Structures are given as structure tokens and as C-alpha cells.
Length: 228
Image 1 (cartoon, rainbow, N blue to C red):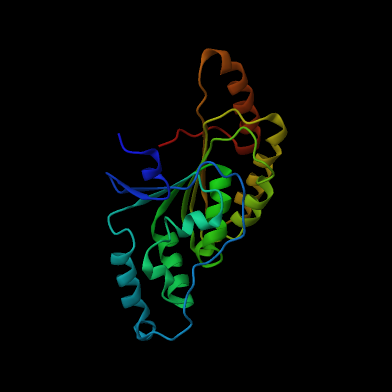
Image 2 (cartoon, rainbow, N blue to C red; image 1 turned 90 degrees about the vertical axis):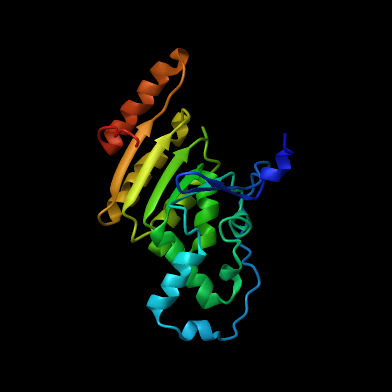
């Protein structure tokens, strides 16, 4: 069996067009983004027509992967060491901005945890957030450690967002439920977003609590939507 450290901060290629990126699970700190060193020297590549540059980005960034999965991101540097580790992201500021924008406009993101979402969003802003199209957020925390507000503030920048799926894998503490009302306001403030939500609850001993949370979410979001 491979050592568990082999799986940390590496990109794992899954079948059916998935790429999973895993950050270090141990850290709980959200740190400011530290962008890798880049040059401001003009590149001949930047003089190419935008259509040609986009075609190159298409072949250079996860060509065979439709879905990118972010797991255990503790700070923005985890994105730089996984999803954004390709040398093309480090050529210069213009190319980095263009490639991140292309990545976010052409891929689906499955993010596990509010902490991972905040870390990822901070690492791709502003160009990535402004072009983000498809997000599935799987809430795996019972408590959000004061990350709900930064998450909503970042998500408001995703003006091109078209699909947002909320999947709850854990019973969220009642004290955190105001987050869902704030999330509803953010989604309503974005145009043409297809929003779905669902709750996956486990065990007979938790059914009543799952029903209680689902009822509260129905009042906020409307009827639960099957997760596909």
C-alpha cells in the first residue's frame, strides 16, 4: 500500500473526466494567497489573437477533464500547488489571468467543504471568480468556523455563474443556519443561476434531525431537488 503522503497535494486523474486535487487535511488556517513568482516581461505569445490563445489554453489545461474536484484546501497556496501548478499559470500576470479565467469558464468545480471553497475562490480571484460557471458545493462541516461570510462575499463576484448545487453531507449546527439565508440572497443577486439543493442524511438515529434541517432549508430555498 502506498504511503498516505503520496496522495497529498497531488493531482489524481479519475476516469470519466474527473481531476481530484487534495490539499493538506491537517491545517485549519485560511492564509492570504501567495501567488507564485511571475515575470512582467512581455511575451510573444500575448501578441497572438485571443482565439488562438484560448485554443492553446484548451489543450494545455486539463484537456480530458470536465470536472475538477477540490478537497481539503486549507489556504490559497493549496490551489497553487495542485489545480494551478501547471507552468502555464506562472509565465506572467496576463497569461495567468487568462488561463485562470479560461479554466473557470470551461470546467465544472466540485468543492468539498466551505473551507476548501474559500481557499479556492481566494486563489482564483478576480479573473477566475468573474468567469466561474458551474459549482457543486458539498458541505461536510457541522460548523463553518466563521467562513460563511467570506464565502458569500466571494461568491457575489461570480457574476457569470450559471449552475450552483448545494449538497449537505452533514447535519449543520442550528447556529449556522443563517448562512443558508445569506446564500439565498447571494444566489438571487446573480442572474440566470440554476440552483439545486439536497440533503444526504445517515442512520435511523438522525432521521428526525435530517427532516428538521430539510424543512428549514425548504422554507429558504423551496423544494429539495434531486442531486444528479
